Length: 218
Ligand code: ATP
Image (cartoon, rainbow, N blue to C red; front, top):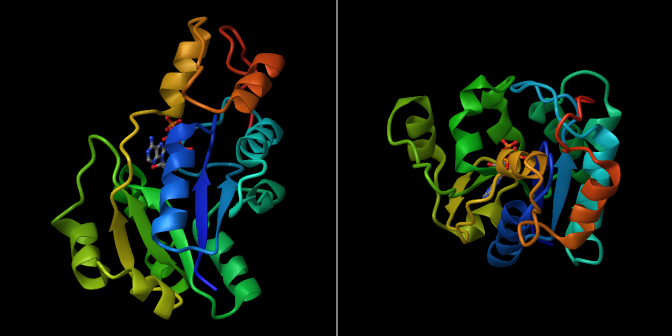
C-alpha cells in the first residue's frame, strides 16, 4: 500500500491547479490516496472568504467520483488554529508506520519556517513539493540546508520510509490561484474552465465571492 498524501489548503475556492497537481502526484508517486484537507483557521493568513462549510462542499463537489481522492474535514472540526504538525501527529497515530506525505506548492514550502513547530514535520511525514510558476527551490538558508540534507530524487524513498524525505515534483504548470479567481468573480466574470462546473455552481448559488459580499468568515 503506497503513501497517503495530505493536501492541505484554504481551498477558497478549490481550482484545477490544485486538482491537476494532486492527480499527477497521486499517479506519478504511486500514492494510495490524496486527502484534501481544507484548513479551518489558517494561522499564516487572514480570514477566509467562503466559510468552512462552503469550502468543504466545494472540495467534495470537485473530487466526487474521482478514485484516490478523499475529502478530510478534521481541521474544520477542530477549534483554534489549524497547525499541520497537529494534523500530521493525529494522522500518524491512526495510520501507524505507513508512509505519509505532506503535499505543498513551492510557494507554501518557502513559508515553512513560519509554521508552528515546523522542524517536527519531517519526523511525521515526507514533504512533497509541487513546482509552481514563478517560484524557485531555495538553494541557501534554512530551507536550502534542509533540502540538501533530506532531498531525494527516488520515488521509492517515499515508499520505503514512513517520513523524512523531501521530493520536488514537476507538475503541469497551471497559473491559477484562488485569489485571481475571487477577483475575477467579484468583477462579474465567469471562472469557467478554471475549476469544475460543480464548484462554479456552489459559488453561483451561495454568492460567496460576489462583489460586496462582506461575510468573510472562517
Ligand atoms: P490563494 O490565492 O488564496 O493564496 P491558492 O490558489 O494558493 O490560494 P491554497 O488553497 O492556498 O490555494 O493552496 C493550497 C496548496 O495548493 C498550497 O500548497 C499551494 O502552494 C498549492 N497550489 C495552489 N495553486 C496551485 C497551482 N496552480 N499549482 C500547483 N500548486 C498549487
